[in-house]
Image: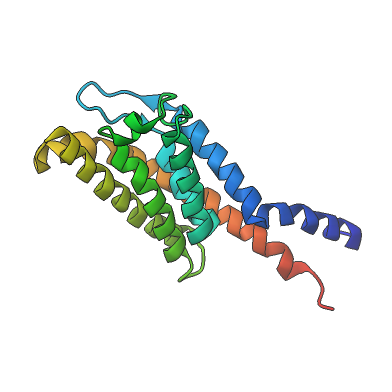
Length: 196
C-alpha cells in the first residue's frame, strides 16, 4: 500500500467517524427498518426491524449522538411524518399501545452508548450492552402497553415481550457484528499509519 493510497483510504474513513453523518445514516436506517413490519394476531405490538436499528445506533453513535438520533426519529414521527412502523405517525401513534417502545428507543440508545464506553468494543461486550438496551426497551414498552390496554403483568409479558425475544436476540447478534466491524475499521488505519 503506497502512502497516497493510505492517505486516501484514511480520508474515506473520516466520513465514517463523523458522528453527524453516521447519525443521519442511522436515522435513515431506523426509518427503513420500521417499515419491515409483521403484524401478530394476538397483540397490537408488531414485529419490526426498528430494534435492530436502535441497538446499532447505540453501539455505533454512542450516548449523546445515539439518543439524539432516536430522539429525532421520535419527534419526526410524533410531528406526523409517517415513519413509524407501518408508515404511521402522529401523536395517536405515539400515545397508542406501542408508544412506550418508541420512547424506550431513545433511552436504550443512550444506555447502550454509555455502556459501550467502559470496555473494548468487541463482539461479546457489544452483545451485553445491546442486551441491556433491549431490556430497557421492554421495560418502557411493556409498561406503557400495560397502562394503555389495562392488561395485567402476565398478559403484557405474553403480548409485549415474550414473542419478541428470539427475533430481538437475532437482531442483537447482527447489530453487534456490524458495530464491532465498524469500530475495528475506524481504529485500524490509525494503527498502520507511520508515526511522524
